[in-house]
Image 1: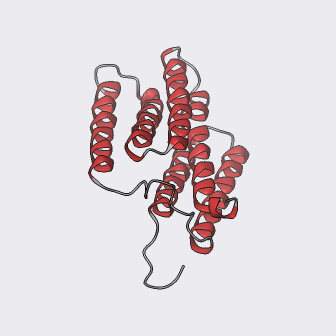
Image 2: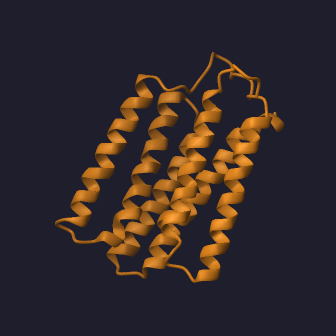
Length: 181
C-alpha cells in the first residue's frame, strides 16, 4: 500500500473480521484438548497473517457498478449500535435470570450473524448475507445445544470456533479478491 493512501473500506472490514475471528477461536478453544487447542489457534494466527499480508499487498478490488458500496456511514453505525445493545442485553438475560453462561458465545454468534445480514442490506453486498446466514445458523444451533445441556466443547465448536474460522475465511477472501477478479 502506498504511503499516504487511504485504506479501502473492504480492507478495513477484512482486518476487523479477521481480528474478531481470531478472538472467537482463541477465547473459545480452551475447552478442547491441548493439542487441538494449539492446532486451531495456530491455524487462526496463520489465517490472520494471510489477511494482513493480502491487505498490505493486494490492490483494492474495482468499485462495483452503480458506485461505491460499503463504508462506515450512518447505516453502519446504526447496525453496530443495535448489535451492541442486543449482545449486552442478551448476555444480561443469559447470565442473569436464565443462568446459562454456556449459551453466551452462541448468543454472540447469533447476533453477529444478524449484524452481517443487516450490513448486507445497508451496503448492498450480497456475500455478507451468506456470511450472516451461516453465522446465525451456527449461533442458533449452539443455542439449541446449550439448552439441551451439551458439552461446552460442542457449544464452543459450533457457536464460536467455526464462526471464527468463517470470519477469517471471509476476511481472507475479501482482502484478496482483487487477485481473483
